Image (cartoon, rainbow, N blue to C red; front, side, top):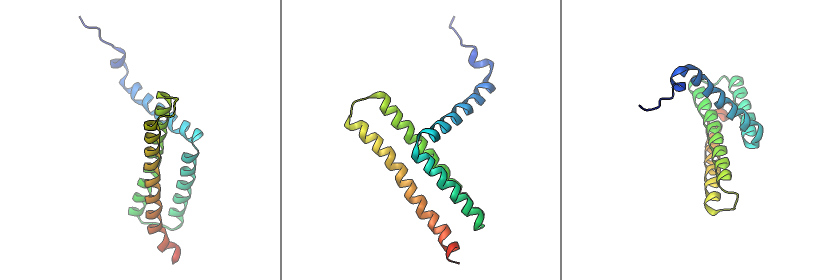
Length: 128
């Protein structure tokens, strides 16, 4: 007779909500510890304020929210990669450096594209 772990079957709803706790804890810890995440948070607040100020269209709101959410998600993944690499090796290893640089590069590419899209949305409104 195989051993079955009944804890997993007992409270699936509690486990579901606990996963949100862990997710928000990860976001909060990243906010507290990562300067770039805080910078992107301030930038997103400014962009949302400008979006209200300039009365952007619903499709523009969708784009802005996707861009903000995307940069937050990438920053979180970048932080996870950095912490994982640091956990695996304390030595300066070329592959560890490449992994961390690639993750940071992904954030940078997305940030640059986001700024370009933001300019496409806001410049015509500013120039009026």
